[in-house]
Amino acid sequence: MTGNQLDVIIDKKPIRALVDSGASFSVISDKYRRFLKKVLFADAKSVMLKVADGNFVRPIGEIHDVILGWDFLEASQAVIDCGQNELVLEDICRDSTAPDAWNLYATRDYTLKPHSLTRITVSGYQTRGDINVVLDGSKHLLFEKNIATPSMVSTYRNGKSDVWVTNLQFETKSSLEECA
Image 1 (tube, rainbow, N blue to C red):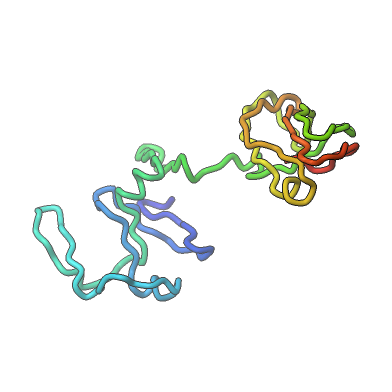
Image 2: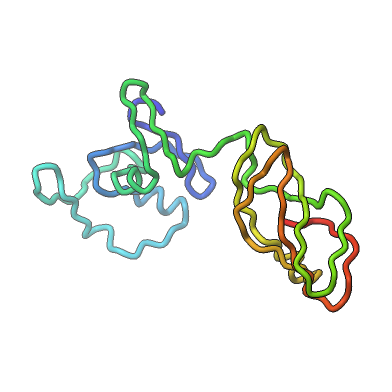
């Protein structure tokens, strides 16, 4: 962040945006909207803006293509630290050391009896310490192999976690590859 301007990415295209905590709503210029190939539903010529003194004015010029207003700052749980010249966006910033999604694999071969629920140990991404993770079920296993893995919260300890799997078939499955 430089002053009150922030480099952002909108639809995979970089742009420098003005951060305006006094603006009730975020605004995008007509020129930048056209560049992004976005449809305009309202007539831009009839737009009126309410200014600080309560009066309404029609915009006559543009300085910034994108203004991030209070609606964006509130939705992203922004913390503005003027002393450090920082804007922290809690919902947007991610821990860069951890991937967004992990592929987990069974740590050994398991025998899954027909129509049975079995707890298996999975591994995939190495972490330091214990963390709670949300595991999403695998659609591939469900549709291709008739093995259901539920979405669940699990503790990932020393690079491993336990997952419940259900064999929906009438036959025994003797090995399991990707599980979550």
